[in-house]
Length: 160
Image (tube, rainbow, N blue to C red; front, top):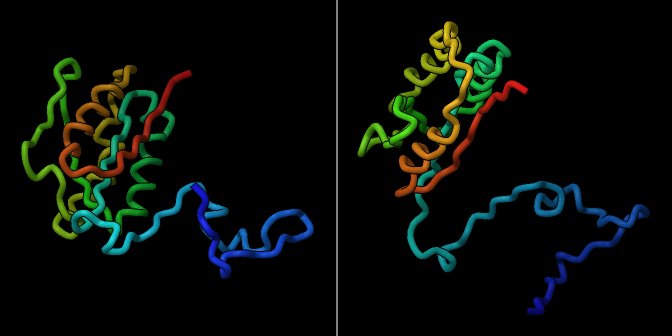
């Protein structure tokens, strides 16, 4: 399929053979670019962004500081994110702990989330379980967000 490039998108090349405006155009210099779709491209109204975090609290993750680093990183970027902590103890028969209200608005639980992120590293500091429940955690996250969709961010530590 041939598509005509709009005239205002053309740009001269620099001495290095790259477009002179490459660093100014995110679609040319970033790994991921999100474009806002106009009404004619939408089948339904856009849904709010859903972010689901999985944080490794195994012994190795706690001892190496990976858990604390993940919680700290999440704390720094939660301005528009709606998380909630869920624990699924059965890794053989994975299920979603809540049938409804798995996804909540950040404005409703921000203080609780900040306290949770502060306490997770110490909450699991005596954990002596070396194995990770990574597969079960991903499966539970999928079950939790399959009806709404969303982004799954995994903070996993591996003892090599």
